[in-house]
Length: 606
Image (cartoon, rainbow, N blue to C red; front, side, top):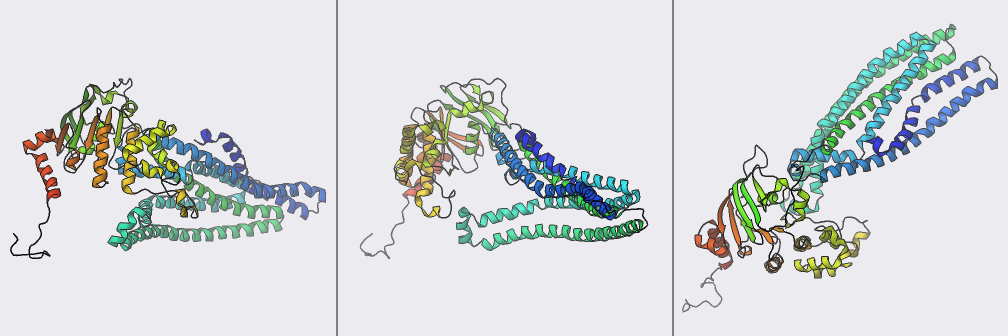
């Protein structure tokens, strides 16, 4: 991925990153030569070369990390942009909703997003791998130097290095495992932090007094994570203390031996300096090596989630040779449609047989959980039936191109979106071609009854319908952004559906649930005019809104319990008639005044 996203930057970064592994060894040898030649009374000319190398090494050691940091940062930027685009391109290609309604996959997607937003793990993995190579070069360089000077000193340093390496690798694995284990606790902690700072949750938290409870849950997650980290930290202190004693003992013994050899003429004073540098350099490099191994290991674990999302295939089958979807002339047929969201879940739809004639309006009614919204999801092909088929003028939806199908559908969903965009951009989400057609946007807004509100905003249709993208000083100026009310936002969602005019199928899932009675009447009048001659499916719990539909279908337990017109269903005196009577009674019923408490009570008035 890094090679594809930033090949030139990677090549430039690799050079200084690896070169820094040689500098400690080069500095130690230069220092040895300077000391030995000074001890031998060498001339200034004989000292120039080692001093120049020592100086150049110092300058490079000081300067190259800054260059490497810049190159690494630039590499992260390019890789992050590439990885983010690739991740969300893959997400956008998921044709259905199954993965977005799967908690396990959503958790994996959230972890995948972490790999590209905060600090791209591809760059971390590359940096860790180069760090491993850099540390190995330093260790090999020092051990080789000691072998040249004195094989016994090399054996002594190596003897001290092996336990350090084993311990550092053990600690790094423990740290990586701990980070992985406390992940759920940290996610719960962030969840409760988000709730406590969330404006949508603030009303209920304050009214119901649940702040202390949520704060306790947040702190419980924090305490659990901190306890796990504390255990690793204590273990690390014990191990590092023991290793420190071992290293100090070995270094002291080695120093005594090298000083004794130097006094006896077996080693030069410069050899003693190389030994001291080698002991410190090897131990430092081993610690860095273990840390880089842990960093790479952790980055690759996270990168596995990224790859799982990017490489996930479509959850809905795509025909190799899709059949063309004709303009809807006959109708949509559901043939023995069965559906459930997972093999271990109960059936939501049970053998639905339904015919939606082209140009007609069909209403779906029923209690919560009867399968109304699920049926709409199948019509949009967000899911495929487990059994049976849905046919568009005889063409099975599974044999058609999904994008072609959805271009022919307009919809208002009960859980409509609020986009933090301008009013024009928010409406145009229904059909992006309308962005360049202001009159078309205004026409859709008029049908939804929101035009006057939008036209009166500080910047009209170009007003941002959000307050989240500005600095604190800007937020005091209402011209920078405006928040619509819930009913106004729902009308904006209706405008998005209206801008997709003259589509073959219009789906209306509780399109007026958040509106007052007058607004609801106005919207349904507009909807009836808009869908005149079009095929439409309407879901509403308010049966007065569906009485004019050509066909009313009552769902119960995932099955079609009744179907017919409003008059036919009332005459049948079944479920629909009972539900309608209950709702109608609620509107008609008025409390009769108590004669004994009425202001003008009189015994002569019945």
